[in-house]
Image (tube, rainbow, N blue to C red; front, side, top):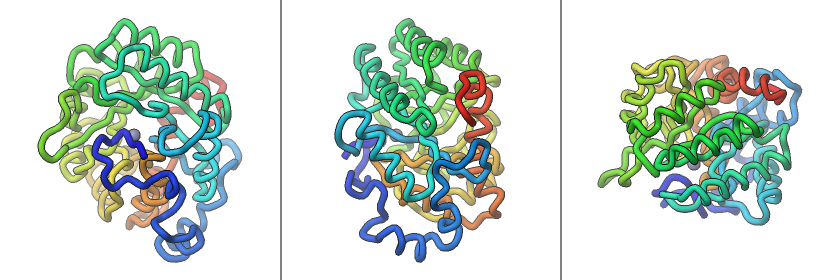
Length: 311
Ligand SMILES: [Zn+2]
C-alpha cells in the first residue's frame, strides 16, 4: 500500500482499489450511490467530447502490482467498474520524499510506459523537484514539450511558495500545462518541504496566467477551501483522504462549480471511496458533471489539442 499522502493510515489497500469496503459494486451502486452512479457506470470508452465522462485528476501507479503496463491495465480495469474514462497519472510508483534527478526521471519513465500502454485513457503529468531547477526544466521539456505529458506534479521536496518554483511555473504556463501541487494541513506540523494551500495561494498570486490544482485541498478541507478562495487560478481537488460529507458542497459554495475537480489518489485510495464524495454530494447535476470531468477537460483542452490527444 502506497499513497502520496504521507499519512496513509486509512488508505485502501490494493485489493480494495475498485471496491468499497466489503461491498460489491452492485450493492454499492444500489445502496450508497443511488441512481446517479448507476447512470454514470459503463461510460468508459465513450466518444470524444462526452460531457458526462468522468475524468480522475489524481492517480498513481502504486498500490497495484506488476510491470507498469500491468499496473495501468489493473487501474483501468477498476476504473471501468465505476465508469471512469480517463486517468491523470503521475509520480509513478511513488518513492522518496526528496528525490534526486535520477529518481525523478525514473518515476516519469514509469508514467511514460503507462501512457504508451493506453494513450486514449491515460494522461500524464511530469513529476519535478524544485530543488533541482536546471534538471526540472530539462525534464519538463523531455516529458511535456517533447513528450506526451500535459501537466506538472509537485510533491513534498520543497514548499511551493519558494522562488525556486518560478521558472517551472513560467515554463508550464507557456505551454498551458496545469500544475498540481500536493497540499496538506497535517496534525503536529507538516513535513519540512510539505506545502499547505496557503503556500499555493502565494505562488498562484505571482503567476496569474498559470493554472494550479490544489491536491487534497489541504486534506483539512474546511481550512483548505478558505485558503484558496481568493485565488481564481487555483482549483480544489477532492482526493486522497477519508470520504466525508460536505466537502464538495462547501467547495462549490465558496469557489463556484467551475473550480472543483474530482481526483481519487488511487491506488493509495480506492476509486469508489473517493468518487463517493462527489456522487453522494447534494448538488445540481450540472455542477456534479463539472466536478467529475468537465472542469478538468476544459483546463486540459488546449494542450491536449496541440498534442493531438483526443479531448
Ligand atoms: Zn497522490
